[in-house]
Length: 112
Length: 112
Image (tube, each protein chain N blue to C red):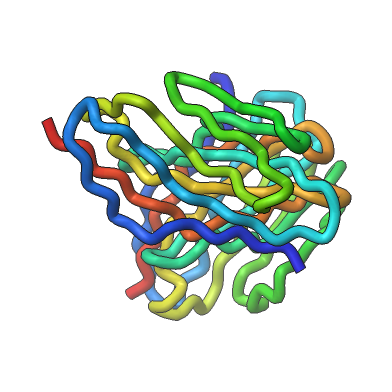
C-alpha cells in the first residue's frame, strides 16, 4: 500500500541554521510528492511539489528533490527564519480521484 | 471571498447534540475532502467527493454524515459524538487527479 514516513519532531533550530526534514514513501506506482506547511491556527498550505523522479520542487527558499531510487523527498532550507516555525507535512498522491497520503507532520521551532 | 472557507472555526458540543460543519470553495474545483487532524496522529482522510458523488468513505463511523449538494459546498453532519472525536476537522478541494489540494482553516471541535 501507499504510505509516508517523516522524521519525528519537534526540530529546534537557531535562526539561519540549515534545515533538513526527512521524508520517505512507499507507493505502488508513480506518485506525485508534496510538502505542505501548517502555521499555528491555520489549515495546510502547499509549499512545494514534484511530479516525477529527479524533479526538484522549490518555494520560499525551501526545496526537495524526488528521489525514486531511495524513495525519498527530503525538505531542505539553507537558512531558516523564526517565521518558518510551523508543522511540515510530506504527502503523496497516486491513483484516481486524487487520493492523498500524509505523513504525521514534523514540528519546526526556530529560535532567534 | 476566495479559497476554501470553513464555518464555524470553533465548536463545542455535548454528546447528544446535533451540529453541522460547513465548507465552501470558490476555486471552481470538482473534488472536495474531509480530514480529521488529531494531536500526534497522521492526517486522516474521512470522505472524498468528486463531482458531488462520494468516492471514498474511509471506514468513518456513521455518527459522521457528509453531504455534498454541489461542487462548491460540503457539509459534515455530526450526531451523538464521543469525546475522542474532538479534533481539528479540515476541508480541502482540488481540481483534478494528482493536483494539489487546497485546505480551509479548519473547525476546532470539542466534544464534552
